[in-house]
Length: 233
Image (cartoon, rainbow, N blue to C red; front, side, top):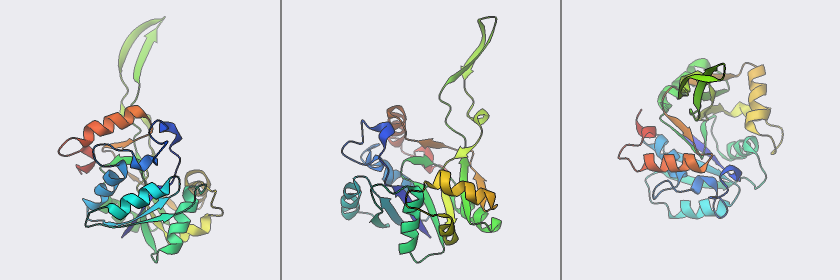
């Protein structure tokens, strides 16, 4: 099973780290977050990776060329201005496969990937997205007549479900991609929903994106552990 990793964005929300390297190459320990994403898959037996690059893609290509691992890894330049749907289409057109796993190069989670794949196959639809709880970032308070009556950390389970990446996609989704400038999230997923071709695999375990410097520092601390939480399935 091939794994496509979307790693071509500009990373503007963490621009302090991305002036000279693409976001997936931001280091958490001695390895970039891209390596940690790949290690999630590799630890569960999926070791065939194609990285869709764009912004500063040569940095990723050079890293792949020097990578010493038993994994099969290649990088494909999918264009500087290409959006996520366009990147998926370009890689699918090169790969001779009907089904691929697809994820982002900046989010970590201990998703049970074999269960995800089995769920996708049982559902028999064109696409499956992993639904996750967004990280709880703010304290929640309740007040009465201006007096705080309760204060505590926001419960992650109260925040609903969001797109956590970790997709399984069938080749036929290419029929839903019109332009290289199509974002997969806003241009393709709604059309799949309309045609009842998108299913959701609910993951209640660890999941964390790297959208801010604070999140980068948190993930770097976790990466230093002997068993980071994204490897504990």
